[in-house]
Amino acid sequence: MPAPTEVRLSHLAIDATGVTVLATTRRIAGVCPCCGILTRRIHSRYLRRLADLPWLGLQVCLVLTTRRFFCDVPGCSRRIFSERLPGTAAPSASRTTRLATALDALGLALGGEAAARLAQVLGMGAAVRRSAG
Image (cartoon, rainbow, N blue to C red):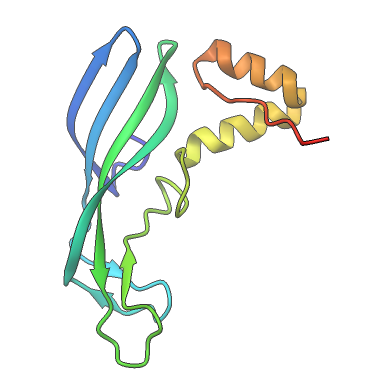
């Protein structure tokens, strides 16, 4: 697991296309990113799909059940927010922190296209983004 203190394994599925890890968050409350106040009042839940480091050459998808909370502080500009998982992934990220770190290291060591080719062979599935023009 990327950050065992933040997420708990619920189910693991392995097939020819890869590994799917179903997980839930461990925290019982969320901290508002604007005012920093702790709240336990849950608004809703949603699924986050994050690419993670490969396992034995297979791509790994972390499907994480994450919660949204209400912020009840009267002066706070945020009424609803998603729980933050800094050890697992950045807000709105599509890959885990540890996969992003590995891809950054590959990119810095090898350069764009060579790093993308090696990442593909290693099961990291990084695509080369070409600029227009």
